[in-house]
Every structure is written in C-alpha cells, then in structure tokens.
Image (cartoon, rainbow, N blue to C red; front, side, top):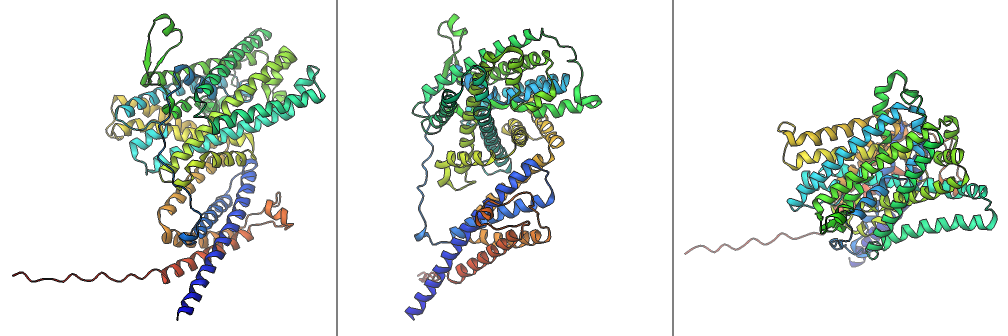
Length: 620
C-alpha cells in the first residue's frame, strides 16, 4: 500500500516537473512571438488578427506562470518579501526640483520634433505649442492643488497616479490604468531617448568630429567616451541614487542650467542668421482648410515636449520641507517656501521656461526657411539646421546640448518608470517580491521597446500620458468626494484639463490608429492579468485553461502570416514558418496541462477530517 502511494506521489511530482518545463518553454516562445509582433506593429498597421495574436501571447505567458507556480511550495525558489519602502532622505529644494522638471521636459524630442513640425505646419505648429503650454500649466496647477489636499489629509502623494489611488482606492480600475499608462509612457520615452542617442553617438558624431578635423583613433575614443558617460550616469542614478542624492541633484542643476543657456543662445543666433524672417508663419501648411482639427491633433502630438513636469511629483519623498527661492531669497533674507507651495511653483516654472525655449527655438528655425525634404532626411534636424546656418563649431555645441538633453530625459524617465512599476507591485497588481527588481524589469522593457520604430514610441508615449493625465486630473474631483452630478466651482479647472487631455489623446488615433488600439488593448490585457492573479491558484488555472482553448481556436480560424519576418527562436533552430499554427498548438498544450493540473490538485488535495461536534452538557 505504501509503495502504491509513493508511486502515485512520484508520478504526480513528475507531472509537475513536466508542467514547469512546458511553462518555461511556452514563456520563451511567447516572448519570441511578442517581440516579432511588436516589431511588425511598430512598422505596419493594426488589425483584428493582431488583437487575437496579442491576446494569445498574453494568455500563454500567464499560463506559463501558472504552470511554473504549480510546483509544490517546498520545491520552489523562495524570494525575500520586500520590506515596506523606507522614507526618502529629504535633499532636493526648489532649484533641484525645477532642474528635474526642466531636464525631463527639454529633452531630445525637442531637437527632432520642433524643426520638422514648425516648417511643415507653420501657424498650426505655433498654435499647438501655445495650447500645449496652457494645458500643461493648468495641469501643473491641478497637480499642486491635489498635492496640498493630499498632504493635508495625510495621504501618499508620490507620482500623479497616487492622487487617483487616494481618490478611488488602490484596487480601482482607474488607478490601475493611470499607473500602468504612466509606466509604459515613461518606458517608451526612455526607449526613444536610447534610440536617438545611439543614432547620434555612433552615426552622426563621427561626421561632426570629422568636420572639425578630428578623425581616426581620437574620433573613436570620443565616441566611446560619450557612451561611457551615458552608461555611468544611468548606473549612478539607478543603483546609487540614495547614496549620492545630493551630488546627483547638484549635477542635475548644473547640466540643466548649461542646456537652457545654450538653447537660448543658439536660438538667438539662428534667428539672427535668418534675420527673424517670419514670412509665411500665418499659413496653415499641410493642414490646409482643416486647420482647426489639425491644431487639436498636433497639440496631442507635441504634448510629448511638455509632460516632463510631472516627474517632480515622483520625487516628493526627496523634497525638503522648506526651500529658499533663488533671487527672491537673496533679496529678502531668510525667505523660504513650504513644500506644499514650491513643488507647484517648480512644476509651473518648468513648463513656462520650457515653453519659452520651445517657441523661441521653433520661430528661430522657421526664420531660416530650411527645406522640409532635407529636414526629413536628417536623423536629427537640429544638427542639420545649425550646421547650415552657423557652421561646424556651433554644430558641435548643438551636439553637446543634445547629449545633455538626452541624458536628462532618459534618466528621469527610467527612474520614474521604475517607481511606477514598484508602486504596482506594492499595491498587489504584480507579485510583491518583484518590487525590488522594478528597475531591472523596466530596463528590460526599455531594451525591447527600443527595437521598434521611433514614431511609434512618440505616439504611444503621447497617447498613454494623455490618458493617464486625464484620469489624474479628474481625480481632483473624486478626491473631494464629488461626482459629475455634484460639481462646484472648484471642480471646473480639473474638469476642463481632464476633458482636454482625453480630447488630445483621442486625436492620436487620427495620426496612428494602431498606436491607440495597441495602447488600449495593452491596458485591457494587463488588467486581465491582474484579475487572473486575483482568482487564486486553482481559479486562475481553470480560467486560463478555458481562455487558452478559446483563443487557440480563434488563432486556428484566423491564422496570422509572417512572410516578411522570422522568429528569433525559429531562426536559431533553422525552422521556417509563415503562420501562427505553432502558437495555436502551444495554446492547446497549455490548456491540457492546466486542466490536468486542476484535476490532480483537486483529486489529491489534503483530506481534512471534520471537527468533532461539541458534547452538549444538559443544564441542571
């Protein structure tokens, strides 16, 4: 009898090991599929079959996690449960926060988007910059008001989505969408910065140096030195941020100050070179008679240049309780402002200063009337414009400020994304044991997104940021306990800003329908993953087994051709495939193993004896 029980136990344990192996292989193949699908979508359109395919890949990834988790507890690798996040060491004052906001706002997109946009759309581009500025200032005001209210109520206020959490609860769909959207948006922005940095450093920098007579070993040394500086600054911020917080703050102030001065200086030089000739600025360019719609669409597109101010809120724990204000505190000795006020001032100030530079630079570039064709052919139009108008030495200065802008964009976006992912872990949307490695997962996501198209990353960043900011703005209404039927005067500003964000975000669909659909589907499927996680061990396996079967059938009915690309795994194995038949078969295998797991766990669940009934003693 004992031998029979041991044999059954060993057979079940063997099945568990096989299930874990199947889950690991399925996860690897699913990641392979999703990488190729992402590369395909970033270059092409988005259809119904793509939605089914993405759903199938997500189902396989979730199923693989469930199969791996089916291994008995005694045989699993234990992860240390993270402790409650410690309170940061207040270090940053008004100047550092302003530098963080400006550094995240005046990023590498400025050097690419503004020259192209102002030359192509003229008045529409200028109007979009003004509208985006006004919208961002109002959004910063809403942020500041919500921060003051949250602090008064004793609520956490790290990052904009924390306002939604305070207003709707940590388990609400609105909070999840706002936090996840902000994570993906910051990750996409960091990936975009990585792409343009690589193009700049390895493709354009040698040519810039050659124009100055620097070639050969010296040129190569400078290129790799720039790469080393970029990596060192990233590692310093990612791994040693707390230890060197004050030094990083001073460096951020210095780099941002240099960048602002150079941008202003070169804008004046470019304008003077073009004699500030604004002939044609009142035309509507490619928009033609449809300019009102183009104005709204273009505002959503250019909003990427302004949303960096919200990175200030992510550093709330590192902010001093009081801070001096430059110039004012020099004149009025001892003048200091509380954190409730100077964080809002820093956010508004970063938007206003960035807007002045963006508009001044755009007008200066337009005064040169450069060729739109030449700008489109240039990887970084700002370098082309500077060399054309001011010569190679000024081109080198533009290259230096572009490098600073790339660094001051990439690092805040990367750190903010890591914090958003860590918050999702602590809130229970992903396993809490992964929170300490949030920066690793974020870095991996950046590397994957960087494989895609630059325009796709810009559009997905704009779309998700605007959706998230729209929800965050409306949180000011919910935080007061108001609904749409009980609005009052204080709710007017957040309502206008929230609706404007949703309106601008929806216009991304007109520019790139695949981005809007991809972003929406991604959010829905991510929340599906959370719901499955909440179902528990047996419930999640049963649900995923049914989901795998349904989606596998859909994939079989609607095969997805891949004639223009090959899978990484299949290339390595030398296997040629042109459809998703293998994916459908894999879904079937996962479904069978999940159902078998449920049956085994149910059949061999621990049998518990019913508790003995208490003996009733009759009352005397």
